[in-house]
Image (cartoon, rainbow, N blue to C red; front, side):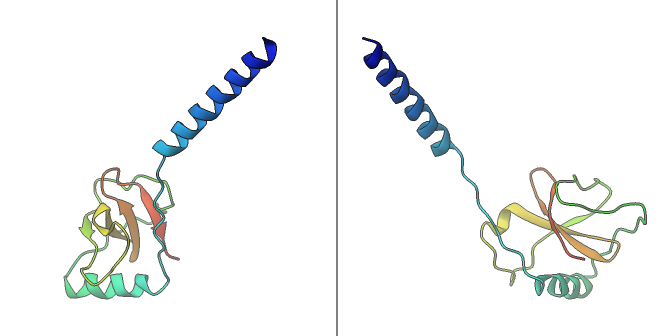
Length: 109
């Protein structure tokens, strides 16, 4: 009896762990160093302005202030799920954000 209770408990635990992992999806997009100059060049040709605030130091996970204008990624920048990202220019440096949250997901030095 005790052995079958342990077997049932173990099966339930494994089933719930499997369901939890099936519901979690993570998409990783790789950003390269070559993309920063490409974004700067594209921003210049499109006359996009940089948001200047010496006190603002963008970091990953930080929500980009609403005062910072964000733009869609350039059409020639091919990344996985590119339509879910935008970018802004802060203190002359591009930052990539998730459109839905405005959270910074990538910066360049």
